[in-house]
Length: 296
Image (cartoon, rainbow, N blue to C red):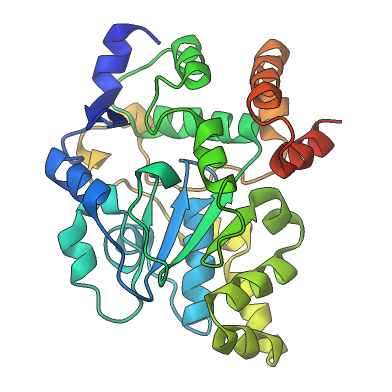
């Protein structure tokens, strides 16, 4: 990534790269780095475009017995607020379900052993193409694909390099208050994965679903990709006035949501570069074994 493009897209706060935009204020970003979750908080953590929004709606559906399905912006700003965007003051005003999200790596978070953390990860080539297409959609200015890929591979990008982000959570995979969630497993076995998430959130939620097949079916229906695509129109709450008419974003937040889009959409040499770096950095991990099974 060229220095000009990096300067336009990234801001560093305490040495860590965040998205650079007027609504990502230094105050909110520093507050996110300093924030200590309360007892009982549910924190959804991820790298961008790994299934964050999907997971947050699954959590809301589980907690509310399939009742809560807020529109996209209400979820983003109010019901599962994005801390880097809204800041700790909004989080501290939450009263009922204290569920919120962040893209921080484990090493940059303040932990509370009495809070629960759910971390979702995704096949990197699918994550990459989804991220690139998303930024193309919401950014008012053009940025170069090759520059973006180069920055992605060396970590000169918002939230640093994807692979170290995952590794920071993998090192704590045995922590009782951390649940690691594979996007691909959630995609292919949603029923059992939803039950697993409910079990992690609390025995009450697990029993609600396991003893009520109709309720479980509703949660599954409401978190089906097609259902969410149709019922969650997307208009970025801050970019909407800046995005050119040719880039109107008032369609669905969800583009494809499939497995294998990276392989099908990216040049073969770029898929190879992403996979080779993943193999180098994540050698010996169960996550790499999952991905390798998809690549073969």
